Length: 125
Image (tube, rainbow, N blue to C red; front, side):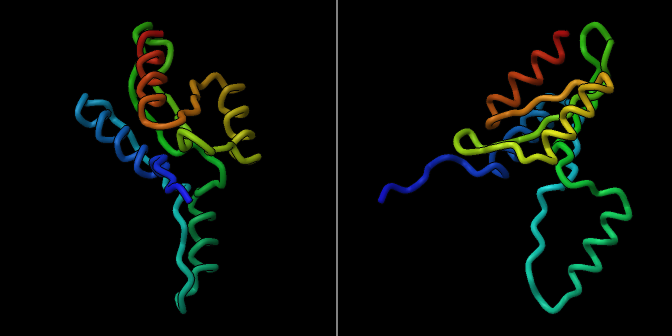
């Protein structure tokens, strides 16, 4: 059986964040993809606390704080996915639609190179 060599979403996201940092572009992770391990710790209570503090299922992975060329936008949201096999979940689709309807720039990137293309298109708007 062949080993899947497609980079993990988190690996692609790390590469993109490193690219942004190398180019002095402010990028923030929302940590929505955080998976909590099972243990004796009360993860349900912790998860509920995070939700009360504003963590929202399906919200885009990254927030880029940069004005585009025409200065019409100051924020870009990017949902990261694997190059192959990454699919949007219903909650992610809902957030993308909501943000788009409110006039924000939102992109879905299949890997780091795709995210860089989305960023460059956004900056040139």
